[in-house]
Picture 1 (cartoon, rainbow over the protein chains, first blue to last red):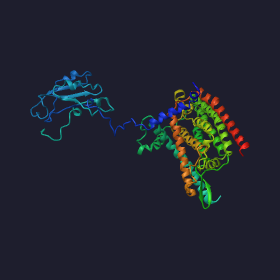
Picture 2: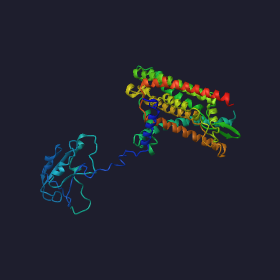
Picture 3: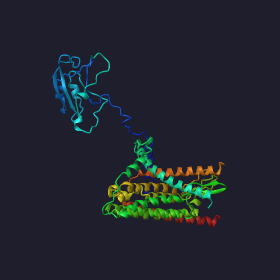
Picture 4: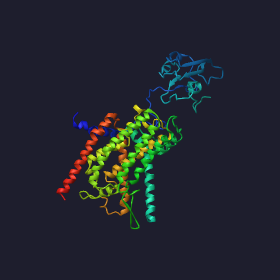
Length: 155
Length: 352
């Protein structure tokens, strides 16, 4: 090392200018609850079971999503639609219970591709948030089915 | 002493003490903000507007922690350590002139808690005592890592105090006084026709460089924070401390930074003097007020510089620290004394 290098002062000054540049740089942090990171349009988040235009559940409990699921996260129980329930379920067969284990799910979207009735979708604006108990990660129909639209002729 | 003078003096002493503690408190907040900004983060912003209540939250958190004393520790010394550290840190700001003089009833009262004519010696004595706080705390913990940290602190402070003292001697040759108030007054004289610009930094640049390096070592700040080196010594001398014992050690460090910044501003950067201070024709008390503001501006810059360096440089290795202290800084400071003395003698012989 030559004399100016052994004095270290030029190197220290160089380091100080680097940190000073960072001091005035735009910050990378996102203040999470107030700001959220913009998600990609094809980002796969929490599942939803869709209703059709008349507010009837589209799912017919065929089980193709459960077969397609590589993580085996989906279980369902099929049931037959009773008379008078035509406004609730679109097909004669429907899912009595439909559960997705969010700890097993890998959010690959194969269930969405397998579904012949366009019933299950992965939303791009919702996530499965952290919870305290493991059983709270098993999402049933109460948390998966799209809520009834406020207006429309679904009676 | 007259009652007005006594009252004003008492107020100044209270203000100096309060301001010292307040600035040390908010230095912790500033440190975290500066660290965050340098690392492209935002820093604490949840407690109060812009996170301004963060120091209070930290204090509350520390108070509610268990005050733990290890079974084999010397209980008396274990508690004495942080107390002594804090005491010596707070004592040092007493002799720093925080402004010119206030004119009340035709009397000039200096804005300085205690006017002693050996101010710089007093500061050196008190700052040197500060190492006892660390040494006692580290020894009383009865823990190898604490003891190693304390020994490092002691040897580091002694090594760097020598170079620091030498750089001060060169400064004393220039100012020919030991009183901080007198030094600040001298720096208010005109230089090249600009009043308030006769700063010692123009006469002692090398001395200032040595002084600032030693100030970093004396306050145990990065790159000289070997006494609390986490990677080797867990936490150094405060490994066994919790709650406010720990809090006092950390707080004393920030008080020390404030005092070191104030001393550097007073000794080398003109103290409360600022350019054109007597040329603007302002009333005496206004000039004093502006001077105090200027001094605090300089102090804040130095505090910021301490933090800026902390988040830029890595820590020294122990042998590098000792090499720098004994083989570079001490010879350099002695050379500085000799050259300064020679120039002064030369001027007296041929230019008087």
